[in-house]
Length: 444
Ligand SMILES: CC(C)C[C@H](N)C(=O)O
Image 1 (cartoon, protein in one colour):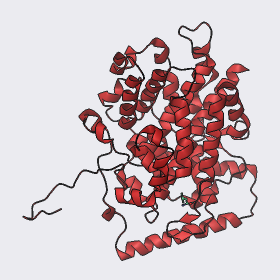
Image 2 (cartoon, helix red, strand yellow):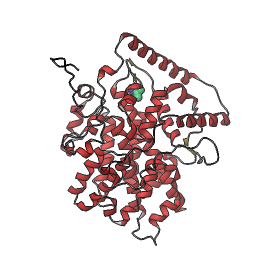
Image 3 (cartoon, rainbow, N blue to C red):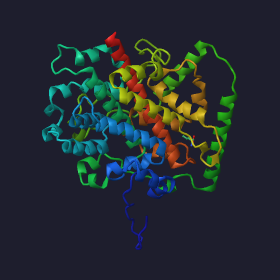
């Protein structure tokens, strides 16, 4: 940018709720008024996360209901503990927004200030959650009944009851997925958080101006054609009546899974700033892809062997009934969410596309649906979208503005936020399924 004297002026730092989405577009698109009136009054004000989710009010309502039940209603864990668990979980994804917000809430709930010096200052019982926190965040498929047993077995020092443990598990996976949302939407610190320099450094400060989006006529018409092409593919997928053998279906799943290994290569752990490392043990432990079909490849979880609807829900219902209902509703709402729009088009059936996104995330987490043809993922999700989805779901802290802007260049921001909702819920469900399966095995 040139000033009057032709001197280069620094671009203004992004302000508002998101580094990726101009505030005007959020206010324009979002039915902020409605949302602020009822749901948010209790919160006192609308924070950046809620403003973003407010682009999808139906979802926001059930999200807040769940979050409120988790953090404020009666439950086995003391309120301050719940905030502390969220801090531990969000630190794994270097999410300063959540660490800071819940540090304040922790103190307000009467938490002991010294715990904020680091995990080692918290009681051993909380420290013992570290392993599960780490696995839930990065490789939930490794969780076994032994991990559960170590925490709840009657002989264990500082033992967890199953009721407490299930609440802690929901809190951790809630925080991990919310960290994905924060990074995926480029959520900026709240005004009162900005003062803390050490945390500010860890937030997405780089932003892209709208000019970075396709603006010249050629690029624009390419973009329009891309949407057209995608819609044609969606129609094709819907009409395909072809039947494939089970073997072919498995091969297609494996192909997607293996190809996803080739996505973001730069996943080496960068420096872990101190504001997070004090809450994290074994910081180098991150998402590790399944090795391509071979010796150590962990077995796929087949959805018909363990699914939320048939297995996870009923176990959770026994151990933490209100939460099971709330989560179930949230999953249903997010899966059904549609405005029948695609960028500049309306009256479109987008179910195949939304399903492909959901199933792709489960595929990255090793969950396979027997009756789903993974060829559809390949036909409907362009490479830049896959890169973005995989990064936000597995390594959210590596999300860059470039990734956000490169996929679906002609779609609305609210549609990209919609992708993030699918992403965070699919991720949360995947992690919960593995944890619940381990509890089932422990109990039987
Ligand atoms: C994620 C988006 C493509 C969703 C689409 N706008 C719909 O309303 O269904």
